[in-house]
Amino acid sequence: MSVKAMKPNQMSLHEISSFVHLGCSAEERIHPQEIRIHLDLFFAVTPLACKTDQLSDTVCYAKITNNIIQACKGQHFQTVEYLAQHCFRTIREIIDREIKMRLIVTKVRPPVSALQGGVSFCLGDGID
Image 1 (cartoon, rainbow, N blue to C red):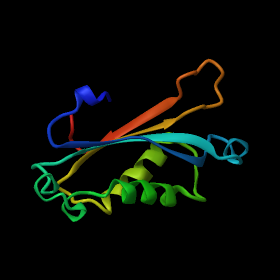
Image 2 (image 1 turned 60 degrees about the vertical axis):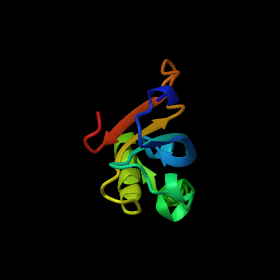
Image 3 (image 1 turned 90 degrees about the vertical axis):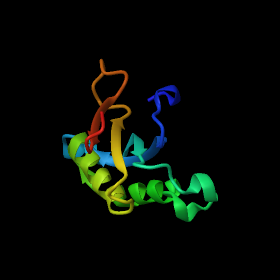
């Protein structure tokens, strides 16, 4: 998503990069493959941090990033869909339920020669 397309009270984490064991076959999962995650957070009201400049009054994107990477470390996934759900649940555990999310997981270089732009799967909780 372009920053121009952002909505008010939205925070976006662009291209969190990690390497995970992802693939249809056991052979494909042997070597970690690059994924990129895009996360949009939609706040119901303007975060208090806009007034206080205090990290405790918003979400910590470093914590979100680290939790995603740690949750995937050592795990094996057959599908990008399951990986996306795994990441979605990981984030949901650490942020307020009133913050809506849209998560896009992209497998950067799937082993399909004609597929040059990767493959992505999107999950969200009621966001257009």
